[in-house]
Length: 536
Figure (cartoon, rainbow, N blue to C red):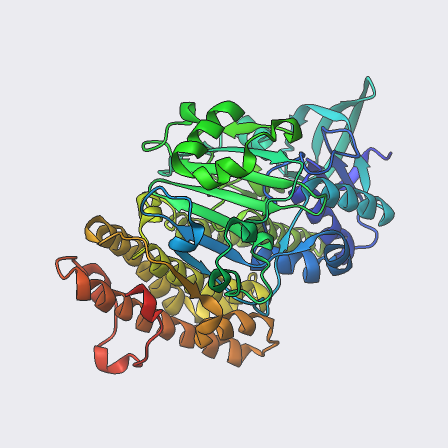
């Protein structure tokens, strides 16, 4: 092992390993050191939570990093996000509102067995010539001043090692080595808790009903491959299959509605399931001997005061920086975006560019994406038990994600400041509209009917919705990209107006003024039904 490096990465988990691979792909001679606390290989299944990826993260893994062969052969193709929305406690899953696609949509995503994946990333990284030291504990970090190199002292195999690097990147997860050193931790307004465990068996949600009509809604009936959300007021429970044959099970809840103390052991979580999700409890009864782990985390969502410093050449990525909420599985997305910003800053610095100013702009954009996404969750957990409003919220959230943020990443415009500047009006408008819509849907849910409806809201039947997903795979030029963002901004305007009209049809007392003042005149908004008729 050499002692001088171009980049030292603190943490060899998902964020650190993918960043190292991304940098190695760009620079074959770059000296990269990854320092990982855990000894490899790590266990399969019960390694780390965060198994579900969505479109940005999946594209980062399979296309940007070129890992598609591994993902297709050794992980599971995900059958999208699927939502079962309960306004009351019941066992008949066919009697509640189901929302998901009846077929695979064009843009892939994956269920990741993190143990299998991170073991592969380690082997792949070493094969590429990246120095990866596992079983190592960081003891001291000295950040260089006025252009000096950084120094990291760590211990491995009872030996103390000193390494220096031009850049140092904190990918140490919740340990937050640089965050703690510099006092960058920052709370946010989202107070939620989570418990989770892995169990060594397959949970096939298609076996929960014998209703033939329900079973044949999906073609083929592969609901178990979805990230299944079982949802009620103030909470959602997840079911995620893993390629190792295990299943990941979790509960995420608003701390004010479902206290962590009611579920922070396997026995308590089973009691909680018996009360709120009795069909899942019945599935898990008598299987404690198959339990592989049990974990919980209080107040998991957090921000950060700073994540990039181009002037001082350090950065934070993954959970070492910010973390939102697992509901829409955005963890891998934010790894993909932060890694892409960091890799670009390092590349420009390597080319002799002063990147202090650019890093501030990247951080401003990254925090803007974080704030926009955080709005999807903050004070929104009561809506989760609302079969009238929650499906509408899901459609809005998807449209905002696929229509704006995904387009930036898939079209490789994340670091294209000229393009982003040209679209600043549209992006600012979409962000403001998203905030207003989240507030509006929360108020709408307070007065909605909240009744269970035995229906599947098939996302594949919404032609515009499926087309929006498929558009992510297009290869387009700059002019087409700008036109698309403007068209998608118009789509959001139309969707927002239709949502307001839908709400006022049954709840005319809901105040929509904050939304309506952001929308163009009704005559300039394209007509057309975008929502499910069944959700009316």
